[in-house]
Amino acid sequence: MRKNTGLLILCISVLAFLTLMDSGMLSTSYAECISDEKVCQEVMGTRVEYEDLLTNLYFDEQDLLYEYHTKTFYYSLVEGSSSAYNPQIKAQSDTESVKVLFLGEITGAGIEQNQTIQILAYSDVYYYIYNLKCTTLPLMSINVQEDILREEIPMEMTLFDNQKGAANRVTNSTGTIKVRGASSSRLLKTSYKMSLTMESLGENTRPNHISLLGMRQDEDWILYAPFNDQEKIRNVFNTNLWTETCGTHNSEGIQTGIEYKYLELFINGDYMGLYALGYPIDGKLMGVNAAEGETLYKKVGWGSETTFEPGYSSTDGAVINGFEVKTVDEMKPDSIYEKWDTLLSYYKQFYEYRYDNEKLLEMIDIDNAIDTYLFLGLIQGHDNTRGFEVRNMYLYMYNKAGTLSILYAPWDMDLTWGNFFSEDWYANYVQQYRLTPQDNLVMRAGPLNQLIVNEADGVREQIVRRYRELRENAWSDESIKELLENYEADIYGSGAFRRELVRWPEGTANHPDEKLNVFKKYVAERFAVLDAYYADFERNIKVGNDYTFSVTTEGCEDTKLYQIMKKYSN
Image (cartoon, rainbow, N blue to C red; front, side, top):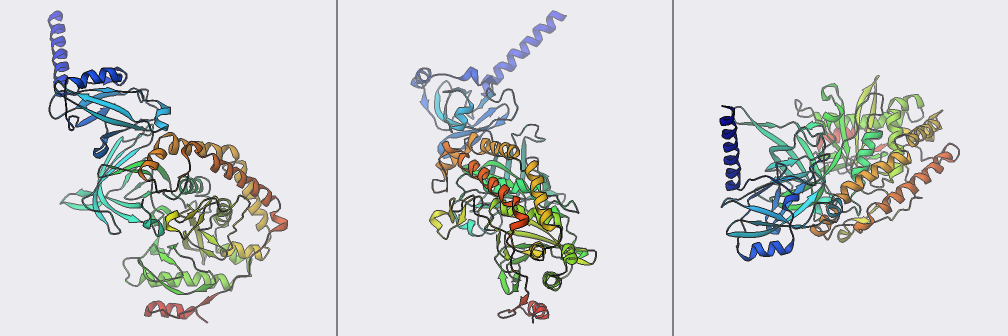
């Protein structure tokens, strides 16, 4: 009986093997499929070329993304996988049994150099040569039925997460997508905003709150395109550094930063290059309670803290000094005007208490304000602060013991570490390394600056103490070096930088062989400058001007906004 059972199992195994061969889905290792050009020439010599021979290619069960016009399959190596460089291969064809041969090994050096490995797919009758690209980054594919512009359009999204220990290797979702950004939206390569959706009972569409790449659960996501950064590092490095080292350093423990993670993007099967996936700063992140009068503002345009004027925003209509209201109580039609009232009330309060150091301290979270001051100074955030003016900044305003107070959250920090804004579209709006490491940009806005002007007891000492604490820990040379080496592996070691050069030759880019060498040297020199600066900070600080306050209603065509501004004008 045991003998018969063994024969039965053997027969079933052979049958299964033959079935796999017949269906073109026989699994073999990559190494077993490596061949040379001579063998491939012999195979092709007896067969007919057929372009659509290979329909699917699987590496360790990963269904490889395929770019049709270049005949290229893309393989994302799973972190920590013992078979990443020698995966199990399955080839599938709609016509007949198909086999594959690879003209080259998968190696780390080859991946970094954006090596193309040729694939010979063949059956008894047909053959075709395809290409293989390998990466160490996650891959995202988006499909749409029309061009992606400023208005949201439907999309379908698939994400392959190659990170070690990923909860889900493949994530699918429907949703909407649109172009995002201000001046960056006019560049050839654009950033996007995605809103994920799902169908619920009754065919109702609702937000799809899910985690992507191990980040927080959300339905709103950003695909940031580092097009005008020669090293593709600044905004991602700065944003993550703030979040990891300063994000929750405030009395409430509120998170004031987000995360970015690199991936490579495809739209309708076309390779779109290197992107960073992240999520927005919003009321969900910071726990804003609109019902309690808490408000999140975004400073999108330059405008002084001393002179408030009416303006216009495409999202909010009539606005004040480049501020946008990001939290609006939908239950009250006029709630946005209440928020403008709150904004002006805060700065009027600031003016009235400008010499009252105790009150000024109540108007800010001192830890958060000092971190913002130090951080923007460190990275040379000239697109975030300019004397009394700030922009690309979120301000969370809340009531603290009867006094309006704010938390700062920096945003959009690509023009930093030497890079400066340019009016030239052909230069992608950037001047590379126009600033030197010796150039200091100091944030002069807000109550902290006024406290420095007032020479408030202990404030300068507290700033120096916090800087030294950061330098000894999260901003130490060793910590920064490790972070930059990890980003270098993502950007350059994955081969994505070289693919970016091919896909977007108009983009701002250094030579790939330089990697982050120039940037790392600049960062090290910048820290050395600040080490010396803060050693003398307490004695030689150059203070800003005294705070003033005025409101002009000239040109305000919104009646309700006019009435609010009029209340605060002289």
